[in-house]
Image 1 (cartoon, rainbow, N blue to C red):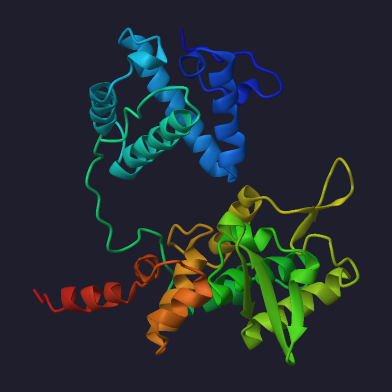
Image 2: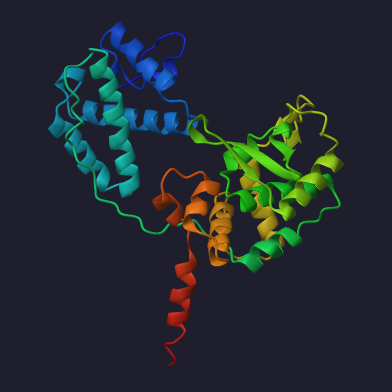
Length: 318
């Protein structure tokens, strides 16, 4: 049976009865999806992976946790490879490894059946995030009507992502006090993944965008309020924009500016990094600004080689 086990206070965090043969096991699983995983997106992905594995086990007559062996996990991974991309398969395997490790250290099971299972090989040398050329990014920002307050807000939001290489969630989580002056220069404080706090000096253009937006919005005195906000239709209170709101806004602004590239929230991180490197910036400093733990991650956002490839293709004169 793969239905969710009813367990107060959070039954939805017990992915299936397979993982909770005893109250102790159920408690351990609950702790894994709460105390061990802080990121909501990761929690959702790992829950989906655990549920998918439980469904696969049920379909193959495995109803007890201690029945699961390494070859079962390997067969499940093989099953996924015909249906999902390698990164998705690797994420499923990572979720099972972490969950089973947690159950081993909690003395729920003796060994981790996913430990020795190998996932599909997947090597990425260049990211797939769509990137805008510098002139396209300028055109997009210039096309925003900054007469209404919403235009000033949208320009400042996009500008923050471009000029700080920040993730959209870090920008949307900013409070008014996270834009501050230090040494006569504006700075932004970003709250990145894993609870990391990251401070970046503002480009002079970004300073202007933020100053004009904050002055027009009249929020300078609301230090603990959200910087990029909407007015809740039901409550009337200022609320931080959601990631989906930012995505829809970007689509509208891109369409209005005549941008044909299918861009998203992450586009501006890659656009800023590429523009910086093209203008003589170093990979080391780009890594620092982007708050990447490894230069390999920063390289994924370096799309300068795209132009070289296009120049070479144009030499095919027929």
